[in-house]
Image (cartoon, rainbow, N blue to C red; front, side):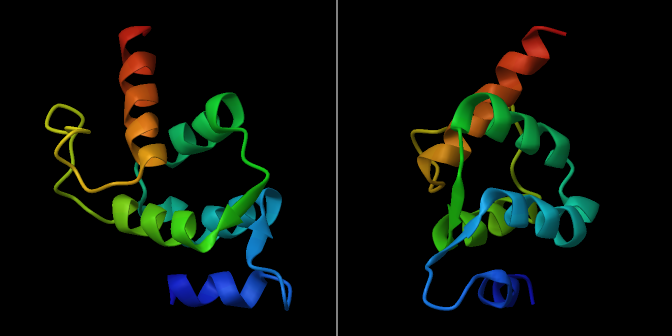
Length: 100
């Protein structure tokens, strides 16, 4: 169902969705089970400067959010299979936790 939402909310003929639309849909469809959702939004605002969301980001974020095997301690950007924006998000979380 989640992957279907991307096509449902995007405009016909456009291959991306706007950041505001993505954040709204994420708040409904992803936030309830993505424990780092608030940090994800903070990361987008502070580091990623996202204006549109492509299908790849949409789908990979769901996969990442629903994968219970990842932990910050075990996450290794060199041996993992996540896209660079997920690697950078993990780095952002680690740095945020060090500053607490």
